[in-house]
Image (cartoon, rainbow, N blue to C red; front, side, top):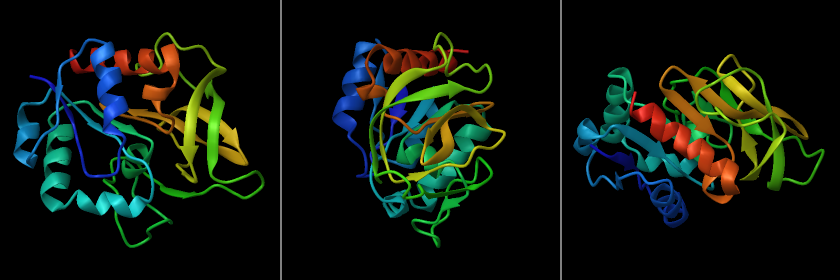
Length: 199
């Protein structure tokens, strides 16, 4: 059993693959939704417009949701984190997976948007995905929309306004930043997810 890295045309899979190889885990890019049945973990990456998630059609959505309900850990990266929520004002008619309550919104234009570069994460509460990470650690971000700070938020960042940088709810995890571009701290986050798939 390996980790399924989903390719729906909206992610920098090359850098994610390199990072997963570096942390020493096996992974595959599933060709069909049914391939998720044997995965020990699922990663949904993504960059760009929320509308890109429309490529994850009903078959993929059902397979992902069935896997999560069966206990398979799921990690959303950047746009993948936003897809965990009910939706986004970036594409208001397109539903998210609805695994987490709330909708994503555009960052206020108090500062330059998109938010691109390194920023710190304040740890809100203890979590598996942030194990070994100290509050104030910097990670690399690139995004214009962000998730609300809700009960699922375990790591918060402020840029123009506070937003959820890291979420965790049972076996559902998400990071707004790019762990594959965030040095040793980002690799630690990926290792923590890999460890969650072994539990």
